[in-house]
Image (cartoon, rainbow, N blue to C red; front, side, top):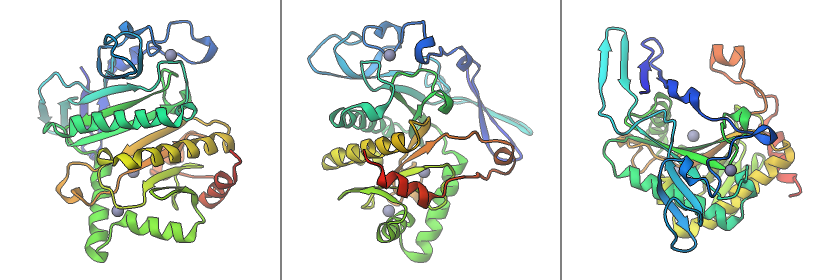
Length: 328
Ligand SMILES: [Zn+2]
Ligand SMILES: [Zn+2]
Ligand SMILES: [Zn+2]
């Protein structure tokens, strides 16, 4: 049973989840075990909670184009009651939450960028559907979608997939970010993201690509080389409220951006995160959802761990120019 422990000095929470060490690892030609995410191996995963099928086939059997299942080795468990313990400086709770896996293709594809645009729309639809499902549940305050691409980015299985977590509390970093956004709004009357997007589009220096609805750019203070942020140009607080007419432009932007990244940085491992509005009164209607792509070309080392600051060897202006000029 995973446990959440609070560091009483930094205020950070840590998840102690020893079962995670039992996860299967499978990468490249060294893989000998069957892949639990491939079509035909449905019995190797927990039962599906959502699946898209071309025809009305049986559940947990081949014929699907996308499946969502509970994580077999969860960092969070929803079956238990929330229990907080506080023994002076030793504060902990049981790790209550939702942890799901979105299996994005029945075939053994290893990168979302190689799926068709139409298939990426299906993936976005699944994100939307699962996030909507959990947003309505009063137990969860924070929802997040993330993807680990490549072994160095933390993926234990190479078959294309992403993960959803729903947590009973909002992580400290997110609360801090929302506080900053609120302060900016109080002094300027503006959403800090909307303002930043407008400035970046005017200046163009850090813009990678752009359509009527979405922009992909390298953030001004990028922590990672070739870090990318994809944002809706209009103010949109909640990812899962995405409009039908925004699906294809988003899939286009994501596919285009990943193709550029793969070409310029030689198919790098990366982490992708969707930040959607937390359930916090000060964020309500004011958050601006976005997708962050963080290539892992170097390892965080002593300086980063000791200071919390990142050293980035590629200026975001240079990164954006290379990505923009890539001939995909
Ligand atoms: Zn597979
Ligand atoms: Zn905004
Ligand atoms: Zn973010």
